[in-house]
Image (cartoon, rainbow, N blue to C red):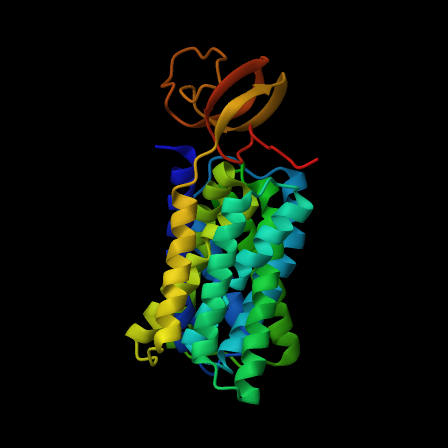
Amino acid sequence: MDPIARGVLLALAAAVAFGLSTPFVQLAGRGVGPFTTAALLYVGAAGLAAVVGGARPLPRWAWQRLAVIAVFGAFAAPALLAAGLARTSGTAASLLLNFEAVFTVLLGALVHRELVGRRVWGAVALIAGGGALLVLDRSSGSVRLELGLLLVTGATLGWAIDNTLSRALSELDPRQVVAGKGLLGALLASGTALVLGESLPPVASVAGLLACGAIGYGGSLQLYLLAQRTLGSARTGSVFAVGPFVGAVAAVAIGQPIGGWLTFAGAAAIAAGVWLHLTEHHEHAHAHAAETHTHPHRHDDGHHQHAHPGGDPGAVHTHEHTHAPIRHEHAHAEDVHHRHHRS
């Protein structure tokens, strides 16, 4: 499979898992404080990652970065989303989450200086425009709704910062990354909930939020990190924008009112944006300098020629290895060997 298409499919799977969780977080979190909600979501995420297990412990530098990521992505963002969901409809909130993709692409271009061509910018414009049409169709113009949407927008910015900072962790074991982030986020959120005196939720709410966290946050993040290995932060974030649309469909399926013609126009725009990603192809002659590094790899990808005594060359494994200089041409994306930064 073309590496871009493979990365897009991983990002789509992550988006579906996250998108489906949003309306159910609203249902399970009804009457639950925002920081308690955030804590339970990331306890669920960390719990799933711990059960699945990870082969390699995280290095010390990764914990330092995870501490910053947890503040934005596992503490502030889910609390803002929970507060927003308490003030707006699940459909409108799900659709507004499209802006996470827009913020992520912008930050990927600005911070990591990733090459984002006209095709990707066109996809971003279609997805963002589709999200705007969907929100416009659902908005009632009330002060209460506007406050909820503002809080949800703040959550999307927090997760976009998380996505941008997480790119450096994409080559590590995703199970360990999710477990670490979930643990730190849950500690921050639960501590804040205790200080603010948020009440303990009923057992049904706890079970529902833990399940949403395990699937929509833990499972989704593991898939997202795998997609980032191939696509980089900007493209992965843009493809992830399909998640809000999935969430909106789920919200309608559980009783939220369906929108009018603007909803269908927005859905068509989002679908067109995802199609631009799925059909993207990037191939040209390029040179690799000699390099020694550590990351998951396999020996049938055209980049890893070092010898191994036995073992399956197609099996993914991790160790320090050295690349000799090489020049070749093949389809590739913004993975660890192809960081075509802007000058």
